[in-house]
Picture 1 (cartoon, rainbow over the protein chains, first blue to last red):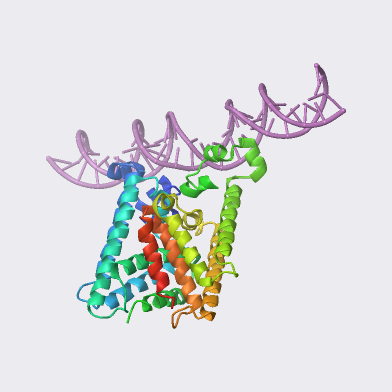
Picture 2 (cartoon, rainbow over the protein chains, first blue to last red):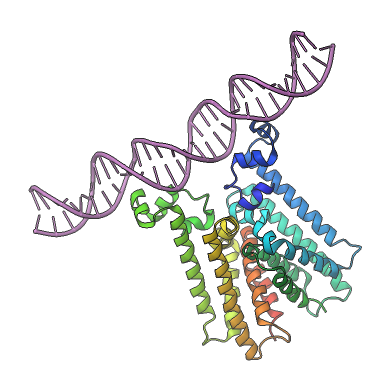
Length: 178
Length: 178
DNA sequence: CGATATTTAGACTGATCGGTCTTGAAAGGA
DNA sequence: TCCTTTCAAGACCGATCAGTCTAAATATCG
């Protein structure tokens, strides 16, 4: 998974995958079929990891506002400095393949939907608890936040400092909280 | 330029470039050197086009808030429906190459800086004119907006409807205006 | 028209791609 | 110990990659 991660699909060659999996050529093909299938497996795992992480951050037993803070803090962490340079398998894949490869496109779209739904849910709970600023619409703000964090992944490629990114994220979230 | 646009650098082969430029193989190499140089030329042109467009949107003779609205509306237009599917050369390049190719990395970073500076300038003028909500910091909000529009390009790959994207952008900008 | 310069189409090169297949060494069981 | 099974190493395949070069066609000009 980590091999596709920073280099992308096309730029990852079989020898890279063999080195990463420590498998022989034959075993790799026996186990996964072909490069495309292996890539989809990696992408699915990446998505599953991301969603379970989000579910932890937005744990229902927790203050939803704290969940939102943790969610943004996690993205700040993953998109600043060297972490940002590493990039994001999902965003790289979205840009590289989502338009041409239907199987990939579906996965990318459903990931964004799933993430947006979780953020919207947390926002709804925060709103019910009276923590949101006046006029904040959870579904709309959820879309804003999803766009924002994916944008962080893009500009994160230029390795901004953690402090800058955190301040930016705080400023954004602050606009929606009471 | 349009060939690299949706497919990216690695996935664009020489025959694609020949078809797109209507040049013979020899002429193309005589004119541009190699694939990488041609790509940098395309990227530079894409960046220059984007910046001049932004300069038009943020024309000093115009209301800065109108400039911000036009800026966001342009991104909404380019990231919804089929336009969104086409993608963005700059974001695709950032994810595919910025981490590995220093020449590309520099261009991507300087583009984000340039765009952020222009947005920050428009926000400053809007603030001076008393159009911004209380406590809005132009430099910080500029970073927010840049992240947001680049995030739009990413989720735009899933071809959201124009109405949804516009509502999202309006909701965001509305939080910063008086 | 004829001589010269320019550009074209595409053959060609070596490297590398994804994917298959063979070979030989290691491991396990009786 | 010997037979079987398993798996790793890498040879091999056709296709295609970026890039070079040649030969024919076309344009230019006197």
